[in-house]
Image (cartoon, rainbow over all chains, first blue to last red; front, top):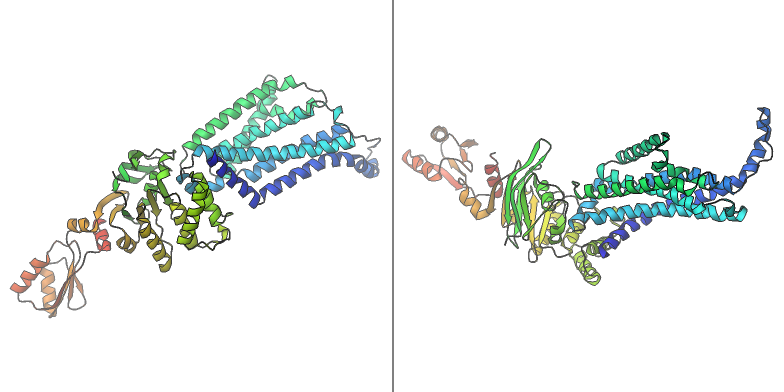
Length: 257
Length: 300
């Protein structure tokens, strides 16, 4: 465990010193603030635009916003936050292959399993930190301006979306072992997400694909019930276990040049 | 027991065969030179020893334990210095050595003490800046410090002096010589003078094959013979000599040189010259150098 923590400390030090931690937390905080802020500003925006819209024949009357407007904004912004986390941290393995820094670490007897698990844990922690920071900022402001109680399953809906992020990150890690270029990782992960989307078009499969979790906000308005996501959660967890295990197996056998 | 034993190792990258049936034995507490031209397969051999690459065939044993690709158990005995060591540049040298100590399972107080000792040994004890701005020489010195940190039984250095200036080279060779007390050193290079200076045994690797190995004395015994050169008195005798012993090379107007590995023996040539009453100014037997040995075994 001491060895694992030493490598963890190194990863953490890197995130702090290269500024990525600060940037990601700032972006997440900004996303968190944007959701209630945009909801709050919507009536004013519509009012200022009313005159020009009237010229085009559109009539703007009595725009009302509530907590759902802010949460809708949250679920629009979170895919963007996930993309930012993936783009900023997808080089976590590749940089080490390309620079050759992993060679000295592995030749010191550090097991590849520890390298793999630490890097995966760092990526997941950063996703959790970014997602839940954004969530709590939105939640606090929503509670101040409106009332979170008018939306149901707020935490469960967020947790399901967060699980989708974990699924994406485990595929980023898997493709980090398979490919030695960032473009390969992004393309591989993108293809997996697209396949899930495409399969979700078929009515018989739509409740069993990981991308189903992206519609977890339906829980807030009772448009869906938690049981609707059971199949997708099981499939997502199974895929995560498969990607994680396969990635670790391949990493143990990867040639490090 | 030998510290390192490489037995019938072969390695290919695609169709390209990089190592062919390599056998090598490094005894304990030796400084062993692994000599070869660029691209001969030295770095590949070292990465196989470190379990970073899989071998197509053969076995490697370090301190009596078999090396398995992907598993790093035998690396606990090894300190490795790559040709271009790459570090986490956001750390200071002391932080990097602390990190290395922690991942090798050293006790914190022992690691701190050892870090201090080694940074002083490699002349980086006053360096408090991050590794980012380090020169090649400084990185090489830090590389040696990290390689020696956990008192390895086998120190593997891949061309540690290749890109250094004469002062830097001397420093590194001195450190390696001093390290011999505590460890066995496998030292790859294409700089033959470095090998002559610090290695008591060496192997020549050429196009993925070990051509010969042993001490300088053993190599000399197997050598076809040192070359010799002479300066004759008359120009006409030079022509006569070259007609009788055509392997010679004319040097200037009166000089003839027979290079190492020549078939004709100095005694035979001398007897013939006495019989023919050929007078000369000088005859000199050349000493066998590592360079001449290397050129002989690679057939150049």
